[in-house]
Length: 408
Image 1: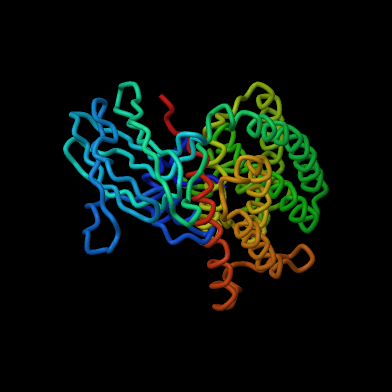
Image 2 (image 1 turned 60 degrees about the horizontal axis):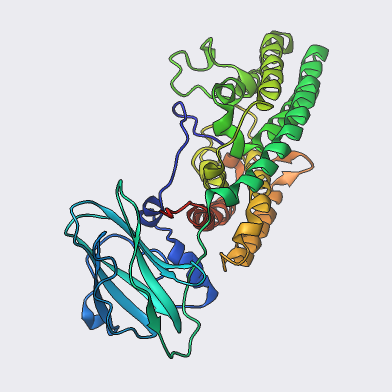
């Protein structure tokens, strides 16, 4: 679910953000069985030679990219990369034939050095330097001979063109879900008009979960998302504020004893808003560069908002929402799977953790009545938090893999 505390703008996690947040792509790729520090390396000083690994000093600039690598060798080793230019630079170490990236450094400042730890097998490699506001430069090709291991981890970079087909596929999927959303909201409106609170509560949950499965599209929905699924965050009048509308306004009324007939105006407004969303979606265009980020962001927001109960206005349905968010994450991953297969050795592990998280959440579904957060035992709460949190960490690796790198 989206950030409810402030108006949203599309967030982009740089690879550096993911690293400093504790989840590096290198660690993800190391799941394949290598002990190398990996494809990404966080900021800091170069490792000391006392680590027992070979160290090589190389330069990174437009005029001297990769200079200094004179004695190539296979195996795990450290490159101490120094930016000898006057502008920041990104540095990649890549396989010349395949283009797979074995290591990268972002934002290497002028005059600064940083360590890059990689595991190289026999092959041809080159450093590529990407100065800010300047064309890229590829250094000399270096041939590594010998070695017994396969090297790595490494990943073939994803291009913006690669992300267009899965994004279009996801947009088409959302188109179908907007039809479902309108139909479910009509059922909610009908239930409210009947005056049957029990029926209205059930219809509310059904409609709300349809919306919660579309999490990767929230950024493209824009202001419609706040109207349909906004909370009281930043509203001075709280639950009585005139701008508090949508699902959560109806939820508050249904679970706080409001006359059902008094909620009909909010249902009318909600139905109008979801119909407008459906019409506007036919003209919307998702940014392909956001799709990998959204795969991570959906459940990240689940942890922040659903598992803390910050979006509960009486229904106690946060775990049902978390389950819907999990479904939404799977939909995005299904579109990204062709790109992840062969790039992300941890994919099978991610699938396993998604299945486990689904089982953990489903234990709290009792024939459509979900356990409220405050009724979970301590052990149950810890299990839910650990399961969802673990998946979020692995999904950060997906976001990093799908982050488009510079090519020129």
